[in-house]
Length: 110
Image (tube, rainbow, N blue to C red; front, side):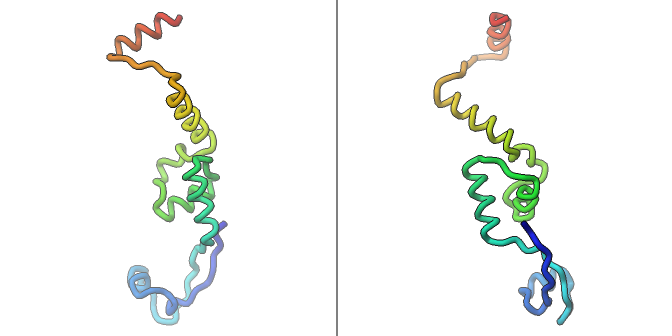
């Protein structure tokens, strides 16, 4: 998971130094995320496995997901999405022309 590392501002690109107002020789702490962690998060997202909260934080920091969409990336939500896709592919669904038709079908099932 991410770690904080002390970095001399001289090692940073000019646009980052300018953005943060860093002076020559100034030391800053940066949150460092290993490339392997990013690869693992992207793989889990692609495979729809769900992410831990720490992984969601990293994904949000990287701009991969929005913070208000964390609920979608939980393991439980992703399992429900996979099940819904399997049901669709297997033809386990009904189509309706209108809401009234849907409600009538629900009434018939009771």
